[in-house]
Amino acid sequence: MRLRACKKCSIFDLEHHPICDAEVIRTAEDFARIRIPQSNIVGECLETEMYVTFYDNSYGLVTYLCRISRDKEGNHIGKDNVFYNVYECRFLKQESIIQRRSDYKIPIQIETKFYYKNKEDVIGEVEGTIMDLSAGGIFFICKKRFDLLEQVSFPFSNKDNIITLNCEIIRTQKPSDYREDLMNQDGIYGYGCRFVELNPREETAVRRFVFQEELKIHREKKEQEKLIEE
View 1 (cartoon, rainbow, N blue to C red):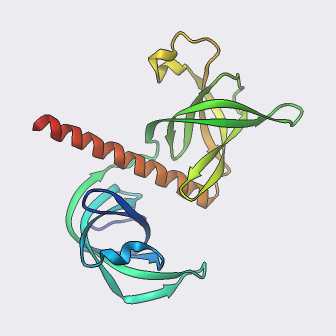
View 2 (view 1 turned 90 degrees about the vertical axis):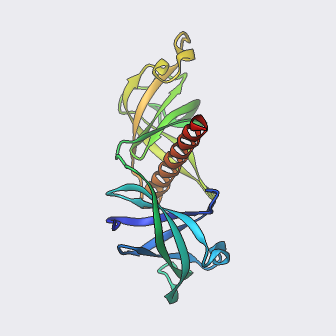
């Protein structure tokens, strides 16, 4: 199977421990060409078998058992003036495909602060909890009442740094839809939001997080099914 619309991938060892992310620069029927900054540790894993999960906009999360080797293209400098090594991922076996849906939501629980502006343009804040997240938005609960189309922002951890994401409230929903223990608690409100004003870097960070969490959920499910079979 040839990947159709793939620009990113993640490399894992045979125990599914993450090693690094990479940029996909070419795909073919039986291999993909990727590039990674020279400072990355993947060079220690050359000519060994590894799992590589490709983030394909058409197929979803496609994982192959691969053999990684240095490509004849060698090194080159990217537009960001960073030196990259080019590698070839030779597909040995297709392990799994997780279909991607644009509205796929991952259940999650992240406690954070939400920031907003009142009518006097004074910035306020409220503690809240994100209950699910997708590439398009979030659902969160808090103890403040918001109106539809109000905007809030919150800090989002993107590996090495923290970015601020902006959301617009598009619906209200009962918090008990997500957790039964919230059914009888007064003064807690739930809000469905869509992301607004995402730049490409922010969108990439959110999509990568959703992909990786989706992969983790899928892997845990498979491990549980394996235990039941045993």
